[in-house]
Structures are given as C-alpha cells and as structure tokens.
Length: 386
Image 1 (cartoon, rainbow, N blue to C red):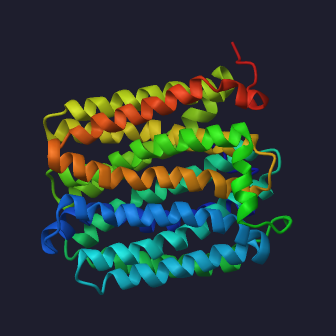
Image 2 (cartoon, rainbow, N blue to C red):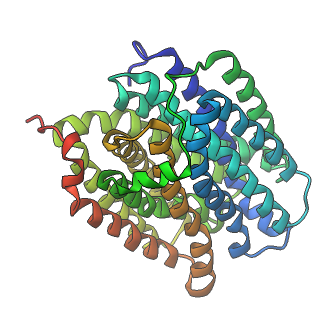
C-alpha cells in the first residue's frame, strides 16, 4: 500500500492505532504463565479476553455517541488514558478474577479509541476510504503482531511486565495523538438510540452480523491457541508476530489487488470459506509445528477479512461516521467476546482441538449469511476487471 498521497491525519491515527493494539497483543504469550502461576484453568484464563471484548463491544454503542458530543480527538485520548491506567493496574494484582475485572475496564478504554480512530480516518480520507481503512487495519494488525513478540520477551521474566509495557505504550500514544491528530469535520450530536437505529439499514446489519460471526473464529485462533501450542513464551510471541505480519499483507496488499478484479463482496465471501477451512485443519492438527504454521497462514485471511468487512460496513452506511463505526464494532467485538470462554469450556470438556471445529461452523455460517445477502451491498459492488 502506498503511503505517498495519504492524508497526514490518517497516518497519525494509524500510528496511534498501532500503539493501542500493541497493548492488546502483548498479553497473548503470557496466558499460559498466568494460568500456571495463578492456578487458573484454561476456562478462567479465557475470561481475560471475554471481559475485555464484551465490555468493548457494549461500550462501542456509547463511544460512537460520545464522540459526536465531545469530539473524536478528545474521545480518543480519553480511551487511551483509561487503557494506560487499567493495564498498569493489571501488573499489581494476584488473582485471575481481579485481572478479569481490570481487563473489562481496559476494554472500555479501547472501545472509545477504536470507534473514534476509525471515524477520524474515514472522516479525513475523502474519496480514498478503502485505502484509509486498509491503513487502519494494517496498523491494527501490525500492533497485534509486534505485541506478542514484545510480550514474549518481557513475559519470559514475569507475566506482570507486559502489563507495565502496555501502560507505558499507551502514555506515549496519548502524547503522540495530542501533538499530531486533528479533529475531522464536525458531526451532529447523536445518542445511543442513533447508534442502535443504524441496525435498521440492511447493509450495516448484514456487515455487523457477518463481522460478529467471523470475529468469533478470529478470537478462537488468537486467544485460545496460545494455551495449547505447547511451546515457550518467546516462541508463542514469534508465531503470532509472523501471523500479524501476514495480517498486514492481507489488509494492505492482497485485498486491494483482488477487490477491484473480483468485487469486494465475492472476495470477502471466498475468504470466509477459506478461513473456515483453515480452522477445520487446525481442529485436525496433531502437533505444535502444524498448528503454528496454520496460525501464521491464518493471518493472511484475517487481514483480508478485517479490511473488507470494515470497508463494507463503513461504505454502505448512510449514517454518521461515529455511529456507523460504533454499531459495526459493537456486534463485531461482542461476537469475539464469547469465543474465548466457549473455546476454553469446549477444550476443557471435549478435547483441545474441538473449539476449532465449532469455530469452523460459526465462520461458515457467516459466509452463508454474506452469500445470501449480496444485494445489501449492491451500491459498493463494481464490475470485476477481466
């Protein structure tokens, strides 16, 4: 993806997004250490992701409305500040229950950031919305990619250090946003009801439902796999670093090349089917090496799907940027919230690879919904180039 010609505010917000999602990925490699040192089951450790994602999903309904009242930039900074405080607090507690509560507040902060970051990027991008969203998803993916690597290095000494690292990163992100990001064009003030009303639009509703089903599979891979890889903290970080690099390639290179040729809706549907197949292969894997390779390859599909589903949701909505983003992200992350605890329960009860089989069914259901609802995105579908 070309940087030349991209609006400076898009680049600035993308860098801040990188910092924010670096703080999420930094926790991934230390999940086995937390389970071991705090005496928690896989099911209980998965609540660290579920509380985070559930609060994040619900808070997106508020974030979109709040941004229209106090401004996107102020909401962005408020979100980063909340994350800085509660990620730092995670390093001070000694029970998995306390971590779960603090992670919920962390999710609140990230909801305020995520919705407004996307709104700012779309707001200043003009006609280059797809490219701007590609930058957003790429910075998100690269942050998640670098996070596990940094978390693996810090977590090799203590599971508490990655939380401290995340807090420091957020403080730096606050300073960066304050100096570089400007407020886009003002939107009219809106409330939570306006966010909920956006679901009446068939395109927004379809994109949000498909996003919810896909994100269930995404977080089954991202949150649950580290617990069963059976490799060291640093190696887990490296696996997910490579996964994140391919995620960036998928969102910035592969999707922009395939979408004009075949149409964004068809590319997204096919990618969902392939992602479901990959999850099925993960369910059939019998060793750490095969599972690691599949995780890394999954990054390419995740990158394509992240960028395309966000583009569909933001492009089809005739509502304001902030409320449209809030509505889409709300269902998207609520879907992700149930993946970790479902995976933990299924894996603990029926076998370690069963969660991937269940996730396969969920993701393929999302593909079916999209395939049967092509018409809701007719306005975005251009003729493929042959």
